[in-house]
Image 1 (cartoon, one colour):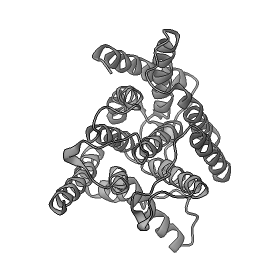
Image 2 (tube, one colour):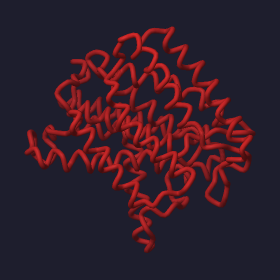
Image 3 (cartoon, helix red, strand yellow):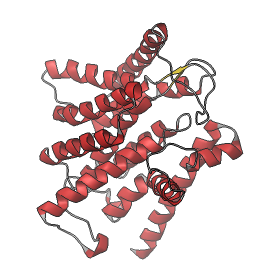
Length: 314
């Protein structure tokens, strides 16, 4: 991915985020704030629309130039998840409907070749039967997508976790992956959201449209890592399954923790609350920026510690 494309995506994304928010404000489509909200000012849930539009328009330009930046067929599953999320932003879709559509999208990805066929020693398993591979891929997709959706609770956290996941996978790769152009375009389209997230007034959040899109992208990346095409840089070699877990450690830990708490309290696992780890951290620090920084630092520290211990064992 060269600099002109990255800069173009960055500028286009900023303009789209700004323009789309203007349209939504004009038609009074604001994000309602309540006891769970981390903001008390006018905001729109349009960040995901800006991110998807940036990726789509730039990809469309190169498509008509007969240039394949990445596998454009990924727009089918990613687009479905984006639309489901946007629908949820407006109409609060039933979680059973969202789950069904997520399963369908997971199956589409499987048919496109993105699936977990090797557990790389997890539970003593390596190559697994085709049916088990499909079931585990669907399960992982559901977990990752909803884990990313669950952490969209304070300014900048979800986009930081997604950017971190993409950069870590590319950094430890032997070379840029086949998904790198898509990943870097997404990062460029998300960077302006830091400005819009942390503004005092007229904020822009990614919304469910954005979290569904980004969660699906992270899941695709993890399927790629666990496949045969991804190779570690020799100096960083480690178990692929362990690495995949460490890349999304915070969303997974938070998802597991909050679901256990909700079930223990007799509530639905999908009933929103403020029991997330980031809510607890932010209640002490009173600053979303510092909270996101601390969570990111801790998760990176754990990754580095595991890498160090792995190198000693090697």
